[in-house]
Image (cartoon, rainbow, N blue to C red; front, side, top):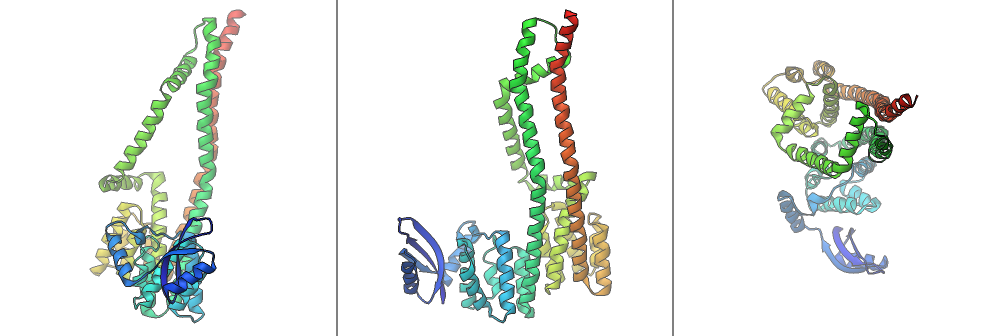
Length: 411
């Protein structure tokens, strides 16, 4: 059986594209007709197609580079793949089963391309490496190690655990940030509404009396008038600032300096370091447990670190390890890696259980990271309420002070 990409028309005349497996293009056309589709084009995913896709990938275009599997889908197919291999199926049979079970077009397209490459004699790791946007570097390196060691199903089980844990952390962080974001947006909208609608209405009353207004009221009126007169310009300025920052952050030197600042600020230092080192430790643990050589694991782990300074520190540590320095000393030399990680690595090196110690270090740092994020979110909510209350209090006082003065004059 081979993989075929097809384009067909449904009963309403809409174009349908997809990937299907069969012995020939004729069989694929028959399958499409049985599904109520009119086949227009059926093309085999052959070595020539794969070669053109590889060349397209290097120049930044082409379907291989654009195709991407979501992290949730990747976790599911990895778990299924491991289960099928553990049940005694071959890699090709497992891929065929995954293609049949897949629901999304992108998943089917990627898995069909991988199966086609495996059928033609390529290794699974080589086939997976053709889809860098769907499979992270840790996935490719671990699969290669699993094929070499003969325990591919166990490696895929570890990868599934890793992907599910990473997805779980991302979901928990996202859910935790929903309420603060909504609270901030609502607060900004309320204050803007007060300054642009309520305050001008009240000011008209004071202007008719001709009385001298308190300084706080004058300042509030000035802010309100600025928002009314230059609100559009202010929004444009904010958007322009965001654009300038976005463009500036594409410069590696600027990002490196910014990331270095993150590691020096007391509050942000532990959070930035915790996110990156937890991810790095988990990646190292997975790859070390899968039989990937230590230096290759360290080099591959650089890709999961978003902080450029820490990434550079790990690169330097890997170079020192290549020269014979122990891992714990190489990591400790920069001073940016947590002492817990350094101590656990040292214990793993002494006991010969480096993968296990890295896994424990990753668990500890992930729990600490989650608790720290929960504390920050918990502190943000009352802080935002207090700030919002303070702003509203200032606005109310600015409105009430002239009224008090007017009452005193009448009295």
